[in-house]
Length: 259
Image (cartoon, rainbow, N blue to C red):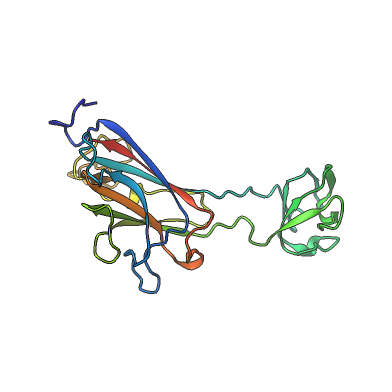
């Protein structure tokens, strides 16, 4: 690694960069206007601050070449699923295990709340034929109903912005420049943003699949070069069920290096 920022190729950095922020109700953009621009009253979160206040002597800018979004909510998969294909199977449940009743018609006794997910709450082990158990909360070996949509995680879109020369960017004035947006698919726990970032202006040391590149095409990483005074912000696009943000929250991680 270089010891100073003098005469250094863009490929090298002095110090590693690792920043993260938790995003929940920080909505950005407007579905009514079909725009990703930050609206009045909205305040996205700062992900990377490349000394926007110009108060550091050892900051000469840097590069971000990896951004990852990780949901904060996690749901266990059902331990047992009851349907026509599993009907008549002997199961053994301990407290806290999850049963998904996919087809109620195969049950010998109707489930208290019908189709959906049930957590076993009994203190002792419950063993029996899956279709003969009583899925009710009114017994000592009972169940709690988690709902039909238990564990469903909606798709969420996060929008990333760049600012320069300001610590108080103003929505609608052009201070927030759209970098890219990235969607976590429904029921996916995390997503990598590398494919959505712009190509870096200089070739970088890279190991990976080169299929599809032409003979004269340089192999380039993707990332974001930041000058001193730049910032990267992030927020949740308010579409669908995320009109007020993503309440369970997600952590956004950025990695790279300082020059």
